[in-house]
Image 1 (cartoon, one colour):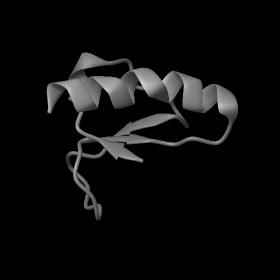
Image 2 (cartoon, one colour):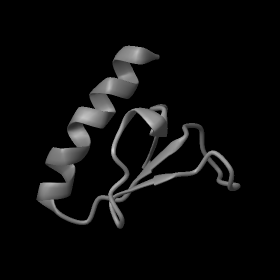
Image 3 (cartoon, rainbow, N blue to C red):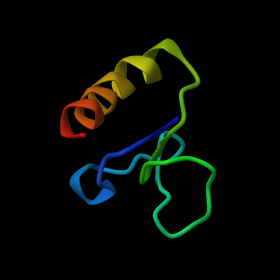
Length: 55
């Protein structure tokens, strides 16, 4: 999932979040979130809400 959150404002976690500003990708947003479990979805919720409220 890609969200419009500035990667400089969060802690990047290997395997969960990735800064995609300088690589090509077919979506909008500067932060990639990889959701593989229910626990990841719970962690991602905060970033999804942040993206929605900011934009």
